[in-house]
Length: 276
Image 1 (cartoon, one colour):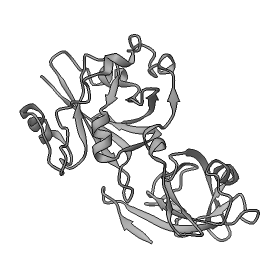
Image 2 (image 1 turned 90 degrees about the vertical axis):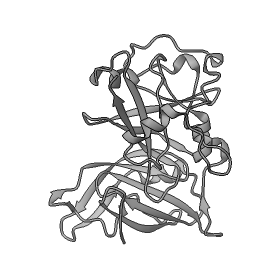
Image 3 (image 1 turned 60 degrees about the vertical axis):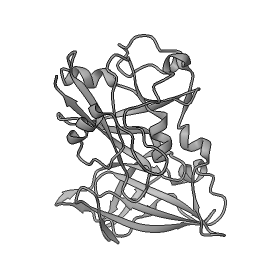
Image 4 (image 1 turned 135 degrees about the vertical axis):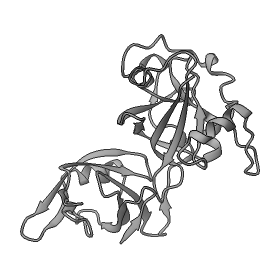
């Protein structure tokens, strides 16, 4: 089945059944063409579990005789990591490019398996000392007390669905691709980009280990880290600042984009630079 994505691209949805000791390591992918817009399928793709947040890199291959597309090897590891011990329905969505998302449905109840409350907030737990930026040129990591007060972000959403924003943040909204997307201004005086916990709570946001960061130059993959105090950080802010030649007086706005069909799962962060 093909559906229209938010960017106008066609995504393919299908389901597969996992049966312990029966399902093979390679998995047949129905409805996935071996060509995308006239170009061959990528050799490597990302497979991501919406149910757990786990992410794997998989090899895609084609049977030349039947043109059937397979995800080669690694499925047994996925089943192990997802703790699949009984027959399970896996519902997939392929973005038509390089990413597969899937949800796990319990066979006995046909209920979607979702992350627990703790798992939704904690993607990977690190010590504060281990949470170094990818670029390695940031100042020393702040302690937990230094993050106090940062939850009062200008775009905090009040109970009942209303939004309390300052005039300055209202003016920044005009730079967003979609004003309905969660967004927040970045404090450029801080060495790290912290995603406001109130924003995460209000929109029930979840993150995988890697997200796409997009700016006017292009896109890159950056790591999401969670500290022991459950603060969520995007690593690699300094490289974004450097390549966009951000100067004192400039402003930065982050817009969070969710995966189609999976409310709350952030797969891309769009960075808007407003020159002072």
